[in-house]
Amino acid sequence: MKIGIVCPYDWDVPGGVQFHIRDLAEHLIALGHKVSVLTPAEDESALPSYVVSAGRAVAVPYNGSVARLSFGILSATRVRRWLRDGEFDILHVHEPTAPSLSILAAWAATGPMVATFHTANPRSRVMVAASPILQPALEKISGRIAVSEYARRTLVEHLGGDAVVIPNGVDVSFFAEAERDERWTGATIGFVGRINEPRKGLPTLLAAMPAILAAHPEVRLLVAGKGDQAEALAGLTPEVRARVEFLGMVSDVEKARLLRSVDLYVAPNTGGESFGIILVEAMSAATAVLASDLDAFAQVLDGGRAGELFPVENAEALAAAAVRLLDDPARLAELRVAAAEHVRRFDWSTVGADILAVYETVTDGMGSAPKVREDERSGWRERLGLTRD
Image 1: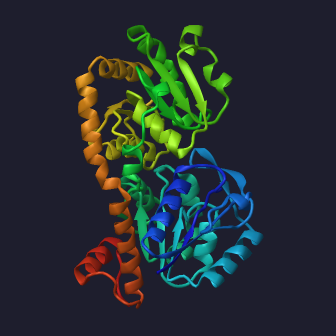
Image 2 (image 1 turned 90 degrees about the horizontal axis):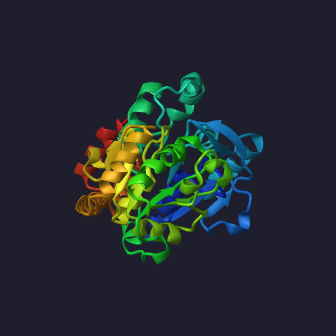
Image 3 (image 1 turned 60 degrees about the vertical axis):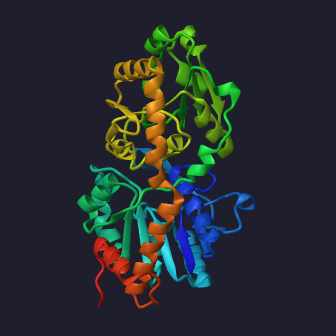
């Protein structure tokens, strides 16, 4: 199958959507499919062979953060050229509600099309206001995927229609087989995320550190991610600052080793999360997880059975939960076992098969040769809301 995938966000700036698209493309290629990914990117020399640049991106406020997107006449021209040259059996656009390459591709394309919705924002005024503009493109999309029930609810409430929920995928074995790093072991708490992005929640975790250190003065907080370290530490006592280590940006291999090494991974995010891929990565590394009780995080952690939850932005509750877990090695071990078992549903062997089933259901519904069993096609067609003309 010839598959075209559109990434809305700048490939040069790491993010969950970009990682998901990268891993999906490589999974599909490994299965023998021909895949081309169109994305904003400035440094074309660093792109994988299956990625095509649509030019530079610009910073745009979106979903409580700042996204780097590409949109305009030049981008539209490059989208049309890519679609013409690709002659894809199916087009898969991500985040078509953002002012990005995805909506441009949806406007321009004909034929089988699938969209994945990552955004979870039930109060998005922008999405409501843009709905009349988006509808002509959205009506051309035959199959809709949401990465979580929360993202599906956002889609249903703002744009109508429905979507099948397929979570983001992870190569579980990559994290499970990573080697521990002695630099990061021994009474350590891990955090991975952009330091200065408020919704990632680092201030809440730092505010909890004095109480954690009062009970466990040997604990170190390891922070991986880019941002202003001095700004993050402002207002903290020298004693707390001394127990916080900034690792800067880490590679995928280093991230896996970090997650395998820490005693506890904390995700103190404050909102705007539709899934929580870092939680899945931590669970894949068989690491105990403590996360804020966002709807998306609670779903990923199986309602608290595969990891513990605390109230959003409640530093006192975070500290109390962390101290209790660090005091209880047996509970930490129990969480590691539960995480390692639960995370199998997020492996690419499962997620990739589900996405391919959507592709095949959509292409079959538009007259392509059937590639899945009839009972499977019927099940997916019903979940996607497809009907034959």
